[in-house]
Image 1 (cartoon, rainbow, N blue to C red):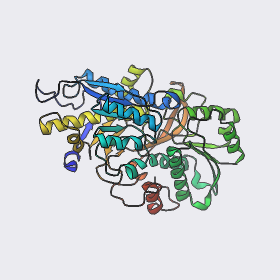
Image 2 (cartoon, one colour; image 1 turned 90 degrees about the vertical axis):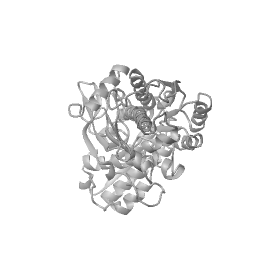
Image 3 (cartoon, one colour; image 1 turned 180 degrees about the horizontal axis):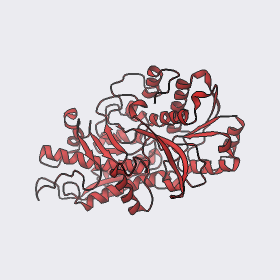
Image 4 (spheres, rainbow, N blue to C red; image 1 turned 120 degrees about the vertical axis):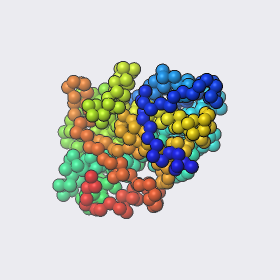
Length: 448
């Protein structure tokens, strides 16, 4: 049923775009508000990432309510904190058992999505992850999900995209030897980024031409003085520094690295430097570095002149929050509209408000046009219920009109070039994408 209902369905994210006409009063629609759980990091070191993500979900909820709700049902949001895995699990269970939510939108941390997915499946609560993109989620934790979906590109695509960007923009194919230093947060995301950046470097450049000269593993949001790491990187003689530090950690690192002159001596490739609220990457950010956005979306692309869906989203987001959206903002926004569209399609088929399991077939295999372009939800393994959109990275450059560093010269990569395809069978350790690259990419060939 899932393949039939969802396959080929294309939804559109945004107000006034393709809504199903609300039914007549009493047409088998509950009269109570639809309870929506929102759970993102809005405090502490992760707030620079989680707060804009939360704002994307809030904007979608507010727009939908302004248009009359979903099939006439008003959305009532309930907020709870995202923090460490145990605390986030406890708050999620409160959303389910105390707040009685109907649908759940979450999360930022790669440690939290594998922790929450089994709970969503147990309680049969439709859950949409805007981030927390670890490959572990659908490859190992919940291999045949029903109620759990994720709209961000999978984590391995982040490291792969960053490495391909570095090879292309830094002309690494022309070097006889590439000395690489790494600094990553010491948890799932950092380890994944390290593995996939390194496997791409070694596969495309040749293993004998790549030398790891330093590895640093600071605790996530546990370090304020990055000086010892920076001096070690400089002493290593690295040509390239690869990093997946993010939010407060990356801001602290780059600000301190400026004082050491690091960016004048080492080319930096970041998976995620420009993924936080754009204005937070200030005009002192060095130009000419790989400016990652989690391989997902940057508010300037697709270009506004040619793609009004992005232009209008950026305008509405800025009018509401007085800042520009992030890739997390876009992901959370689209996930709310994805749910809305699937509920409306299910209503058209059933003639009544659908149960959660009746919405699922209208999500599997479906696509939605959002500000980033088209997002497709995979219907079959591997990574069933994972969302896919074309990847993007670029070069850091200060925009004098905006007054901060932006992603310039965007490199857009078809998602099928950077992630394991549907139907591929192979080992999951460390990830399927890692093994797919090892098995199918030609050594010495840049696949973009």
